Image (cartoon, rainbow, N blue to C red; front, side):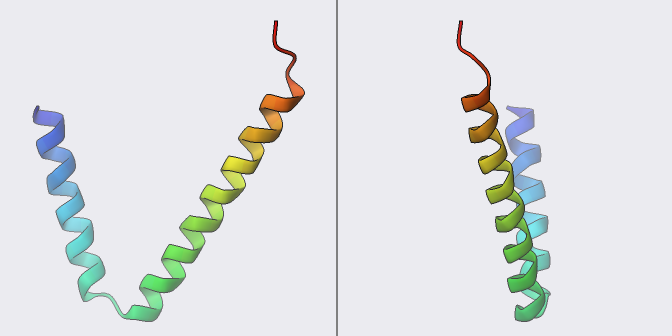
Length: 54
């Protein structure tokens, strides 16, 4: 329960920071994060195909 409260507080701080940041900075940061997650997902999918399932 304490972990959930801490996570929600951290989320509030991050969203509060984004609300005060310029839109261009927020858009660039969101694009970078989305690209990083996309690359990670592709690498994970390729890694699962390469490893033989026993």
